[in-house]
Length: 98
Image 1: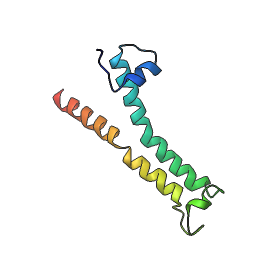
Image 2: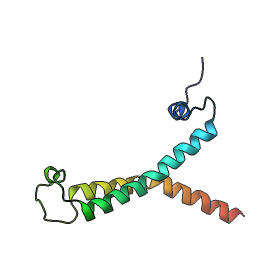
Image 3: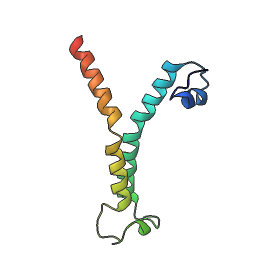
């Protein structure tokens, strides 16, 4: 029987049959893109938000500039920091070795 890899879906999506290195790089970049994307969404929602879609999410409308959507995007950004922390740690180790 053949092996099943966790990144098989990514390999199929980018057209690589056995390109594990390519798929891992794609997954790494996607992981790194999540935190800044959510941070930007939190910023834009905080500045330009207050639309009708934000109203059902908050019990007290207009009380705090940190609406539930801004808070949600901010928390998602924090929760997706792990790939950045791993990347920073990996590069710091490389700098110390050199």
